[in-house]
Structure formats: structure tokens, C-alpha cells
Length: 193
Image: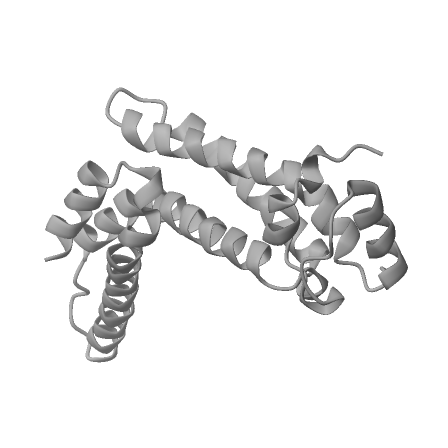
């Protein structure tokens, strides 16, 4: 039942760390509502063609409106969490830094807007999730200058060698297989030129 799932998501989905476990329900409800909307539009088209009174599906429209901000919140959180896992575990040279930075900026601005929108006594829990999300994006942005620099095609093996020499550490993998996570574990963010 869509109304029960909506109420469950609004009331019980309050733990930022659980976002990936919420994913199935979050997307199921969005897909169901979207499919329901498409079907009602099809019904309305047929009613129009037959000259019948058009049925008003205001309850569905209301549910979609009620869910839209919650979906936006959890969709952004889920995509960010999946993205950071991917960006940190794939070879650095395969990360598209420009696209990634664009996503981070978009998500950050959207999250700031959600924090304002959820500023009500009835939506304190989603607002807390949005604030945690803002902070997580900020934390990832601290890693991003390194990721942006070393994901460039112009980075040569000599650049890596110089970095490892200055960090006084060994190369963790073949140049083409080095991941951001490996470099973070080596303390690349503590390294100051």
C-alpha cells in the first residue's frame, strides 16, 4: 500500500547511515507513484476520447507532492554514498573529476535548500539527515583536490613517484590501479608540500 509506505518512509527513515538499506523502499515507492501517475493520465486520455467526465486523481497527486522532497533527500543521499564508494575504490585515473565535481556542487546546493525546506517541527528528523548529508559532502570535498589532480590524463608516472618520495611511502599498486582509498590510507591528505 503506497500510503503506508509513504508514512513509513516519512516517519521511520531517519538514520543517514542506513541510506543504502533504505534504497529498495525509496525507489520502489517512487517507481510505483510514477507508474500510477502514467496510468491515470492514460485513463484520463481515454475518458476524454470517449467524452466521459475526467476522473480527478487528487489523492495520487497529493501523495506525489508529499513524497517528492523525501525522495529527493534519500535519492541524493543514496547516489552520493554510492558515488563516494565508487570514486574511492576505482582506479583514480578512471574518475571523471569534472563530472564528479558538478554532481557534488549540485547535491550540495540541493541539500542546503532541503535543510531550509525541512525547517519545521514536523520535519526535524529529515532535516537532521539533510544536515548530515551536507557535512558528508563537505568531508568528501576535502579529499577532492587530490582526486581531481591525480585523475587527470596528464599525470605521469614521474608525478606519482615524486609524490611517493615526498610522502616517504611505497607505491600501493600499479600506477593505473591506484585508488583514492589506498592513497587516503597512506595519509595523502596529511601530506603538505
